[in-house]
Length: 210
Image 1 (cartoon, rainbow, N blue to C red):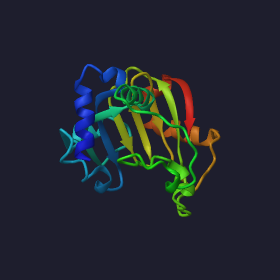
Image 2: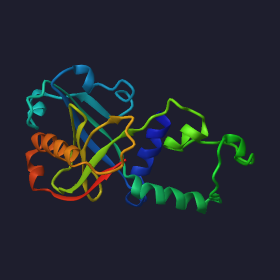
Image 3: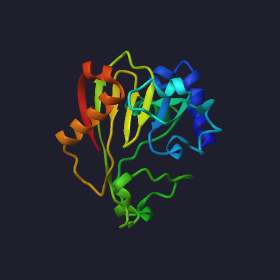
Image 4: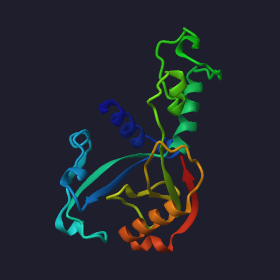
């Protein structure tokens, strides 16, 4: 985890950061129910800033929050980073081979490292019948005035990116449904608008499901 963060942070400091879709982002995690929700022991000592939110900071968003943390981290936008990383890979002599394999034994043996990034495809590739999807849905809105991330209870989050702000979310266990759901959309908007009322005037750019 330390190596990964150092990689992103070094990239953030470089001149290639805009092309790679990497920037620094600060935000708050709020909860009304438990102080453990706003703690993350894996990254508390890793991030440059991770501290308890002050009483004044707990009032930045509507909701009567009892617990909170403030943090500063790196944001990576995959729609920018993946093309950037692929280009770097090819420029350094990498080769992309497109091939359908049913198991690891069908993978050519002339590699030093094999990374399994197949997602739900691992159910077949690894014969893992316990693997199930967790469905999520988010909205992308245009709200350039939002520069800080906010997380609340019930998978509620407001996450500013390079061009849009992501409003989320939901986690639906064992759901293969990739269709947009208006009820999930309504619930997400209601929770995010309650958290940050100014979002009511934000233009909805698109909705994503996966």
